[in-house]
Image 1 (cartoon, one colour):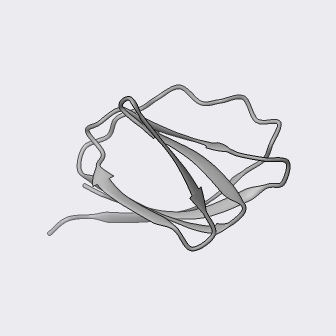
Image 2: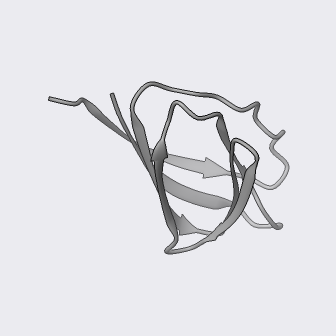
Length: 79
């Protein structure tokens, strides 16, 4: 059985951009409000409320708030 870890993440506009990370397993992100710049390897995506992404978490990835309002997303990481 895979272990799943759900987390609710809030990003604010003035946060420093995080360094890319990689994790074992898979990851699912669902944007609940605001807009997020999601980078996976060398690809950049703008995700808005209702958008989601599912990917191999071994790939280098990071998220940052886009715009001038906070953003929230649900992430589920499976190992």
